[in-house]
Length: 309
Image 1 (tube, rainbow, N blue to C red):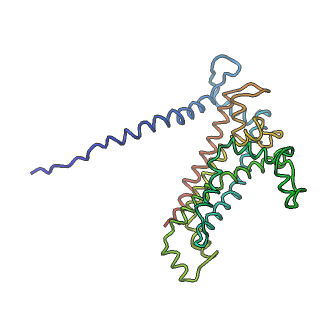
Image 2: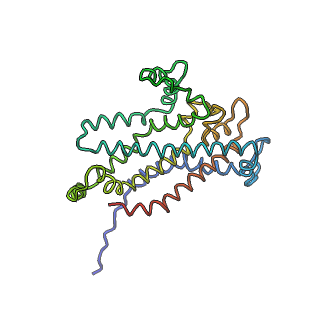
Image 3: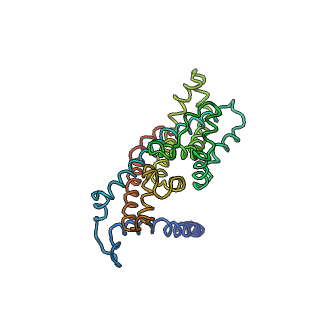
């Protein structure tokens, strides 16, 4: 007798749910990406027709004095913006998660909510609110510092070139510190109780237990948080635009690649928009993010898998 093979039924619901998502993602994300990369290879700012010029826009961005000065300033600021998030936001998020995971802490849900609420606020609300708080004219920051005897410390932090970018970075840290906190908190809860009990039987408790047992198991989660921070910071735009305006003042000291892209593409009161050079900046941003993500996926992530349970 010939064995009859039971054919697996066609799962019609898979394409039904996937096709709309793929179409929307392609229209909203994939097509604009390839279109911007295509536009970066053309020119038409001074003519009515697009002219293929190859990599001339990229040479102009790196070689022209006007464009290169703005680009390198924005790139330097972007790296500083990212570094501040890495050395301030993520360690604070890990520390908060570790504290909330302690059995003696009561009301954990309340604290988690308080720390995570800023991440749900829009950039417009956060930027405008902190601009009001730190204003030397009508802000409350100077009064609050004076109330605790630190009034002499107050400065117009958002109005000084030396402090504006750091201040915006710390505001962004305040807004998003809840995200690494929640991710690390979830990772801490996933550590088996048997492992913790074994460590306690060996006399490893307190800070020693966290650094010797828990922290190594958190490295994969920390790696994911780091790459998310990298991608988010090199796409940053909203907070600077709301707090410092289209010119990323004072004197371009808070300029990021996102604000440079916006001002170049759409123009402003002092210059006409140039979509082709804007697309070129977008192409550089895409390349930077792509290189960073690839280095993480093929370099760091493979090593971090060693620490997975």
